[in-house]
Length: 114
Length: 115
Image 1 (cartoon, each protein chain N blue to C red):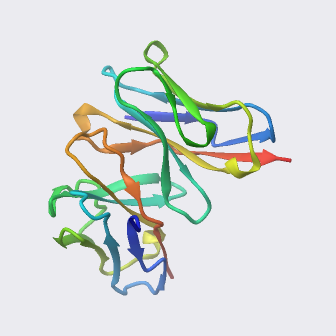
Image 2: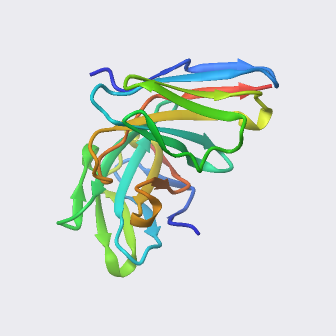
């Protein structure tokens, strides 16, 4: 069963435009939610995470994400894209019934046009 | 801190050869994870250790794969014999603390090509 789904394997935006990367999870119990970024030929770097508390989470590089339980979503946004944001972005969840394992979505490649 | 260190960064080998990938976690971290990344299957957890003990190896694809963690600062992932379908990027990650929400820190990965 798919635990996390990222809509759109590739997203292209213009520099300065809004970035919106979508992530939905499937779980009856709210999981812990993460967004990671992977630059070319590098490992994954944590952008932000939601565990408990405030549902709007701010991360590094101006990114933020909002946990919406009613929509089972955790979409990643940034008001104004920069060329350096071009990378692959992974949404991930930890489910209580999966022994604490981090389960990744398929990833979304973000391109930023000048 | 130097972060998670993996070696080699790139490995090219021929089918049937033994391949050993190495990982040094961040000092003080008591969890270590091995992941595989491919275009077809994305990022998959292969195995993880807690305090050097394997906790869950259900993601290890088959008996050709084995992982060890002889001490808190070193782990290996071995493939013997290797096959072309093992070509992938293998990541090691580590984290501290028992909370499942604790951040995993990833190494740069080993890009493996089996000819």
